[in-house]
Amino acid sequence: MGRAAKNLNRKKVISSRKARKILRHGEVHGQPLTEKQKGFFGARASGLPFKK
Image 1: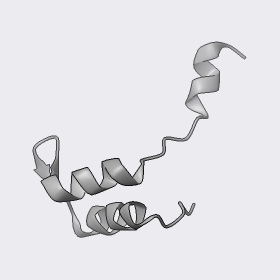
Image 2: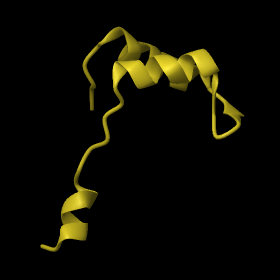
Image 3: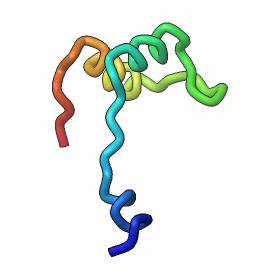
């Protein structure tokens, strides 16, 4: 398995600091956050563990 294939299996984790920053800003790539995204980032900002 090459290096590129190993990176595909890696999960991306958002820190609570980054989640708070995104919530405060209220948009990503110029698009406003949806209600689901607000809930996700709110959970990450408060420190709740990631669920599958």
